[in-house]
Length: 221
Image 1: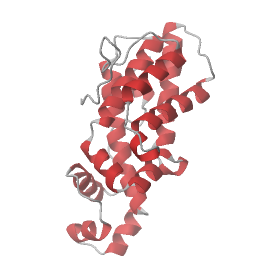
Image 2: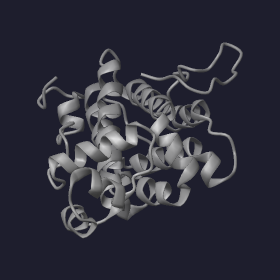
Image 3: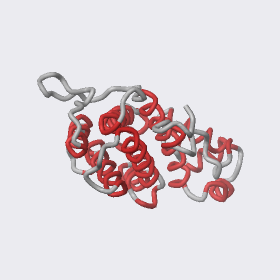
């Protein structure tokens, strides 16, 4: 996996999967552990755990949203790389659809994210789906670079310009992935993959879809 290889994770996600540089390492590790243990990220409790005052913690991380966003983007980057590595044998629209498929199923299976969406829906959507949240715009950028790489590899023309298409793909994924929070519906990632496949003119089916067209809820990497 190198940055020079078309479609490689290094090209699609040039910042890699290292911890964030703008959050002190000990703070980030503690926040990540809290999230993975399905505990609410309480800044007072985190400061006490780290042996510092709450005001000192805020000076180091700017805000709770910023720290939680750093944790979510770190985990998201790792999901993106898993999806890219699992689809290296594909190219063109089929590869893009397969990456979206693997990404959405992986994210849907993340227990920490489901806890956050259920217990703190407003904060979750603010961080995950708003321009200021730091996650959505970066995912759109990764999808746009993936579209560029696969268009070049397969010589396939896109139905829309890459920036618009990347935005639409991400918004489709969010709409179905977070449907229980956004619209009081059940999440349906297979339906999201089907819509993206149609948008890209791909015949690839979602990995979770049955032969009769039924849907399965989740698949965890």
